[in-house]
Length: 201
Image 1 (cartoon, rainbow, N blue to C red):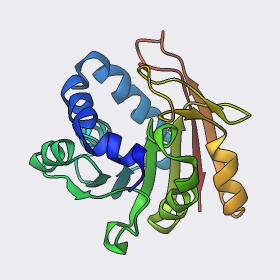
Image 2: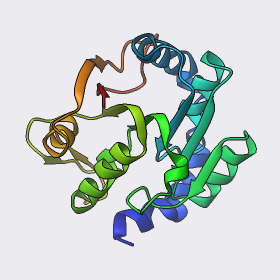
Image 3: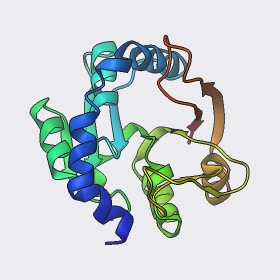
């Protein structure tokens, strides 16, 4: 386990989970997922790598009632909260070899790849591809050139880069369906500045 994983598995991850209840951007989260699923149509199953307490899964659950919701989460506290909502959540690093039973129609990350040790990214791209039946979504901070950002006064905890380009270089058969930008000041859509990319296998 690298130091970034230890960081999120431990006390800081617990504090993050307690702090981020999602109430302040629930409307924006619903609108974001309504937009994404307008391109995919009704989904039968979804897997989030790095689901924390399941806020994205909550939005998908409201929009698509008959849907299997799965996640992988390294922090035990967050994992327990998500499981209490009846989501299928594996307590594991998202760079580990995740069982194929978690394969879903859509596999995605949201605000997670930015916190991953760059040396582990390829393993996660491979998991996204392996565990997707049809769609892959990446919703992260963007930078044309890899850039490290200080995160809560800590180094080696956050990076911006072109994650979408990297996964398409690894899997050139991915078809780009749509991409967009979430602006933090649009209270109907977002709580942060992120770029999203939706691919089809």
